[in-house]
Length: 118
Image (cartoon, rainbow, N blue to C red; front, side):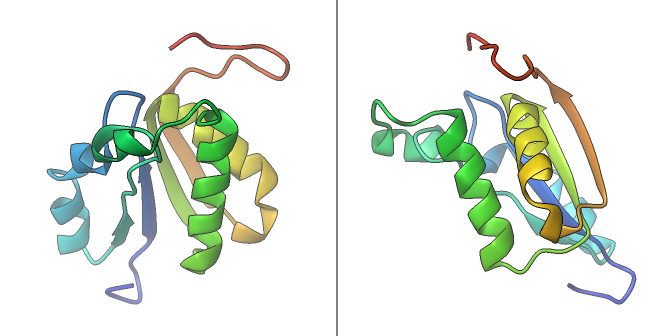
């Protein structure tokens, strides 16, 4: 983190984007002393070439959960856009050790046992 008062923001893009979609927001947060992590999800954006028949919500949830663990992220603010909101909701439910501070998103969350077509 850049300062004692800074937070960690984990920015999750929507279905047809990549981590690059947050490029205008990242410096604004970083200028204020926050740490910003904006990964590109496997099989989307510039990583579209890694897509395979198994690439989907569970893969993306696992990717973000692993990122939080690998980066030792605690008390993070998760921000998701559209499909990213589904991911962060599932991550927040399965990663209680991450001590997630809050979750803000424009999201589509179909609920357990339901599907969203995207």
